[in-house]
Length: 500
Image (cartoon, rainbow, N blue to C red; front, side):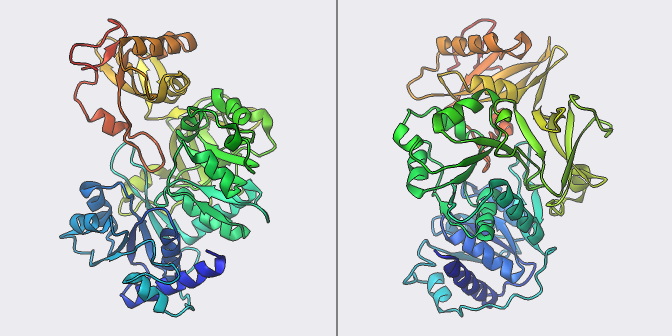
């Protein structure tokens, strides 16, 4: 689609939705796979002054009903395969009045049937009225790694500033092509869309992130910039080498959040492109970046300095600022920033204090003014008086050749207060047995202090994940009351008979 196509189609969708009763301030859900439908629908809602509620296509009855009820969505645009789930979950909710099926052919030429035919027949021009920078555009639900998701209230200004900051960070110009593989119900493809619109460059949308085909998609698309996060680069590193695709691309820059420091140089060597860290949250948009030219940051774990319009500091538990090298909670303020959590004033007040948003991340600032992530404030394990960062242990585990992905959690222990447990997803063909568990623990023992080495190991086929590819640790912990049961125990070096 050209920019003109998107302008015309979003005008037409806005006109159809207005005819169906959507007004400024109304919440409208979208449960759509990656494609043109999601961004065109989002821009149509923006023109109406309505509010998008992105719905994870992996939601089932419980979490879908929660998002619909909490947001008060009145209409949902859903792919045909998801519409029955929406109707089932929304049954009995007083606010939800209509579920509109939107197929992949809705905006095609010639148009599809039903909603697509209505859109094609609508006028190509649409007058925007009463929409400003402070107008609410998204209720964007957080990943919910530690509990029920909270809806971040994000305005038009929030998105416009992210587009501007990311365009400048990536130095987008004529000839560039951006690529996104994340799902559109997560915020990354949304800011990618606006960044490209602001820069006047194409956005290539992949249907999903597939490690086995990713580099060929990058090569074939002609992409020059992309943003990854979470475990994506680790999964890519575990793939068999494909030099033709991995080196035959046009990429000049990869931005990534959560780069494992010990793997950073390997990423650049294998794929022949600079990787730079960027830090942000749904609540805050973009906060810290490492400039493209700063090759000295590779492998240091630096997240960068604040972007224009943002300030950052490291604070103690009582809120006092800490000096360089001291570890505390990272706090940020400035614009862009969420308005607050939808329907949760107490949670908003807890998160934003005196204008500073407390991220929940442990960090320190170095002498250059770069911030370094240490771990999550609530993702630490207290073992015999020592603090263990789950992220640090996960980074070491991920480098073991048999490990596809790892998640580290605390386990209650009568002697040490808490013990370290590792959930491990193995590479295909690896045996989930005593020898593999022993090898993984020995690997960490060679690389970490003894108090950080996992005592318990549990093999899993896959991990429950958030849209941002973070492991839902609370879901893992909810699977059994005693996390020591059925696990490989380093003290006995064997699985119990009922273990795996």
